[in-house]
Image 1 (cartoon, rainbow, N blue to C red):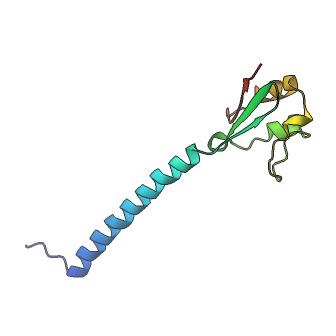
Image 2 (cartoon, rainbow, N blue to C red):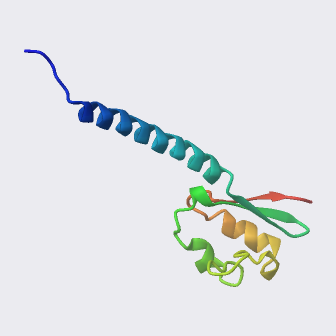
Length: 105
């Protein structure tokens, strides 16, 4: 029995592959943009690095230092509202690793 597919079927397959390729490309582009979403907040002693794609929104940062972390505001980290020691201790509690720091001094 010959295999026969109407023209509209071929068009559907062709267009679905184009659409699939489009979404694959969008995923690549979006992952590139997400990987670029690092924010840094500095004082004289440390720089806090926040990587949004790693964040699991556990809220430990806000619960531990509510005077520093304000998710509804921009910038959402007020680094001057705590000592560097308090900030480092809190960052070490971040379960996802979305928050990290580097010492400047």
